[in-house]
Picture 1 (tube, rainbow, N blue to C red):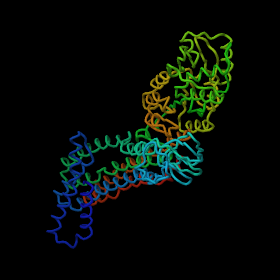
Picture 2: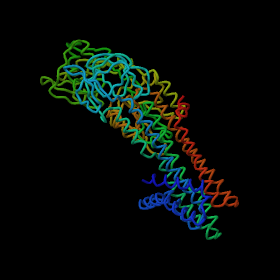
Picture 3: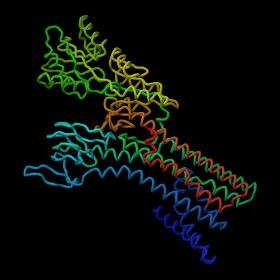
Length: 615
């Protein structure tokens, strides 16, 4: 409504500027008064709305300037003020829509029609007619329309629409496939598990749109600054009038100092940054996190799944006493069967490879950071660290501790298995350190982040081994989840922020406790996306320096906009006080210079602007 009124007024003003000389003066003044009032309506309403909310906005200054100009009969000034305000509003609406359409354009990747396998053959349905449980057929060259699991077929999938990584991923029976991803080779039968707005892809779209509607800290600073600036400008103008009694001078000052450009230019820069990051598989939930990244001086990282690949595997099993390896693995698998922890999954996979039947326990209990417990045929099974066994009064012999220390000193994670009150074996686990981690750590240090700390529930030997391989600056071992949260809280506060990097599921509490929580490898994981402030869809640590570079670049552009705005205002005030320009020229000056910060932000919509800063 307000934009429509502004557009009508804009056209009317342009008509007068173009053809006003052909109209007689008795007609042109009422005409200018009418369009001046028309164009002032949305500005005045916004000013009143802000004042009711106990805020001082740019619209208040513009409303006062318009009223004074009309009273004085400065019709050229009225025209330029309306041109300035209307252009800024239309420009802001257009660029905001452009930022959102850049993301919404991804929705075109989802096909309209879907082939569904039924008993009597394959039928074609519209995407909105697909239901959960339907078997969808997708061939090479087609995009997957839903989230689901492969029940037949194999091939390679391009997930660049979600992760920004174009390298294809091999998928087989039992794997999960996500909407919008492209089948590069193979044919898949996929059982539908999520449709419409519940799919990972559309949740990402919704998150980005929500982030673009939010305000970052620097955007809030714009509003706070504008309030004080406008108040000081009005008080200064009143003082100037009482001193000089020169209404033309006062009006010229008001015309030069209108600040609509900053109110539009800064949010525009953040819109562009959030949209660009989303296309690279980085979901940022608000501008405040982009700005916050520029003030991060400590990065806290989890070990498993973050510094390491998270592909934990059982490398060796040491049975104790009369128990065999098969018995140790069998009992461990019973306790692990109801856990979703990566270590439990590794134990179950090892049991499957050894063709050991996995049985379900009658009772299951999980102790985060320690291990799992279960009851099977009235016997207690414990799989976990040394502390968990000792807490349950299970004795660990000297020989058993020697075996534990031997594996632990070699840099492995080691679990104890307890059965019927006795320690019956060790399970030795291995996990490969990510090859890109050293480069990532070096990049973080290049950005001035010198304090990179690993928090892990593993023992000192394992933590020290990982530290040597990765180049992190410090570590804290033998931590429970609550210990990680306590560490982060103890280092928060002040201007410098703490960022936490984790897998987003097991580290949800620590991510929430940090100033900025970064969850990695979150593709297809709703809980991980929701628990973080920044979600990396691909499990590539190199994305962290990328998002820091994006944040620093957009904040740099925002600061440039403040400088541009300040310089042109100073020039305009000098011209006013030296009587070089009057009200009409001041309005024209402000109208022209308003576009400088706007165009500075607009260049961020060119992909090359961000490509250069992330290399």
